[in-house]
Length: 166
Ligand SMILES: [Zn+2]
Figure 1 (tube, protein in one colour):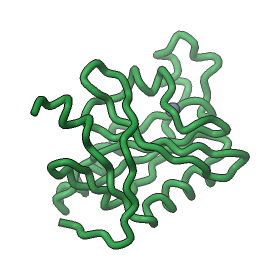
Figure 2: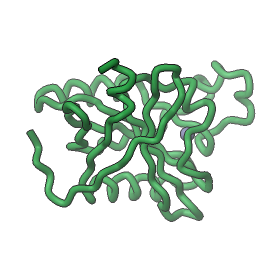
Figure 3: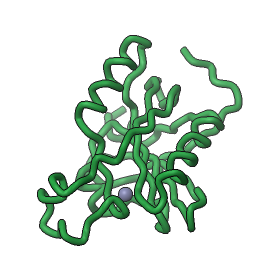
């Protein structure tokens, strides 16, 4: 099966406490966007989240300067995860045979659908979980994954009560 098709057929498995952790981080950072990493394991047809790794939103004037519409962009509209934070998660995950399998962030008073910027900056292979936060309360949560032509496709989230961590 071609890689693109295989990726397209992926699902992401989470436990209820993972969704809880994402929702809590999103509510706590509201009205700013929250972000974080998803550590887990990639299987044949699925990805399994093992740990939610909340990070600070590293968006600041310096990162904003890379964008032409920087003046209008704040943490309420953008997020960035510092490279050293990625590295720390990567290293600590590796000790436990876990990889960074995705990134989550919130859309304060927005839908759980990726923005054009989310798409442009996204990496293949990663799952992108987006949680909509309506007036401070986490609501819809969806996962997205790039397919071959760098467009996002919805990725089903399967909530499992008991995690069988390989
Ligand atoms: Zn976004």
